[in-house]
Image: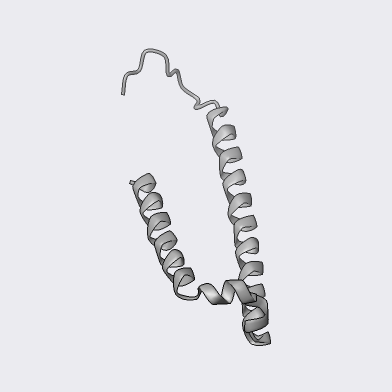
Length: 86
């Protein structure tokens, strides 16, 4: 389910980006930086910085979760688990 959702969102956003670029092709030839004002550039920088910060937080959380699972697998449950099929 997660794989299907990831592929679907990638395709949808890829098509939207391609359509946006095809409508504004002249902006790419002239130079997109010369067409944007300072406010838009500031917002773009803020979005990029926030995406990087969020990805660092998520990667740190995923690493801590993986480490917790490894440590949890090493814990002695306190009873014999041999021959139990539940």
